[in-house]
Image (cartoon, rainbow, N blue to C red; front, top):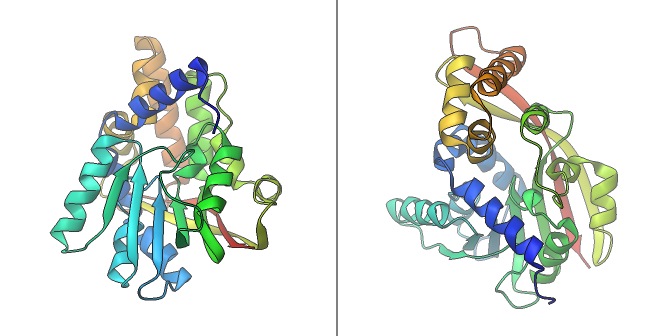
Length: 272
């Protein structure tokens, strides 16, 4: 594999720092139920070897292990891998977690029966490399399952808003393109014999009102935290107000809490 250019090394360092900022574990809790539903739909056989790519705190790895799968998780954020290990230990689950790059995974070819990633690999800066790695480590006849936010859905709109205030670094492909069917078909063309694409909704819930959700994101969600901190006081106020408007617009709760539906693209690819 070619060595990284200095520019790409710098970009990857910035991305790692972004995802390690705050505490993503506080955000991940809001989509645990949706993650379990995603895994349950896959009906992973007991004993199957499963890889959770860009695993975060283990939202996919843990329910897969509960089903009896032999699970490995990979993420480049040291603090998230540590949280994932603590969660697995608390449940008595034997999950092997590694710190590493989804674009250069430390596993041999054809290693896993099922390769999964939820709102993870879509953030790799080189999507063609990420796609090639997902396919490479999957066994022939195995499945690659992705959950990717769509451009038009709630999360896509939130990232779009953040990009207006803090543009993404140069060289970074838009992550939400992984939520576009035509793009996915192109990226997962080689080595795939069957591809199923389904738009689904993820319920995102918080026990407080939208304004407090925004403060929660500013404190804990790395991309929001970094975007906010890059602004001057006037910019921070405008960014906060626009985020509150967005959460209020999408909020379906009427009891002082927040409940939004975030559209994502479910990708199920069978390796040839």
